[in-house]
Length: 91
Image (tube, rainbow, N blue to C red; front, side, top):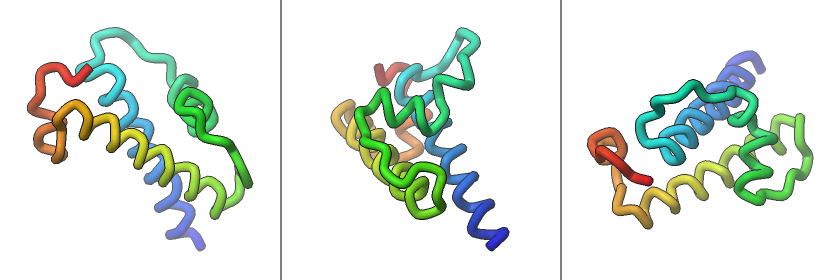
C-alpha cells in the first residue's frame, strides 16, 4: 500500500509540474502552489470531481487531467517530452 500511495502522490506532483509547464512555458514569476493542487487544476480544466480523496478517484482525476494537458500540448505541436523542454514558448 505504501508504494501505491507514493506512486499516486508522485503522479499528482508530476501532473502539477506538467500543468505549470503547459501554462507558463518557462515560469519567470513566483507561482502560487495552491493554484496547482488537484482540486484547483480540476476546477480550471472543468473536470468533475467524483470520489475525491480516495485512491481510485484521485488516480482517475489525475489521469483525466494528464490527458487534457497532453491534448493541449499536441495542439501546440509538442509531441514528446524533449520537444516540451526545447520549445522556447508553447503558450
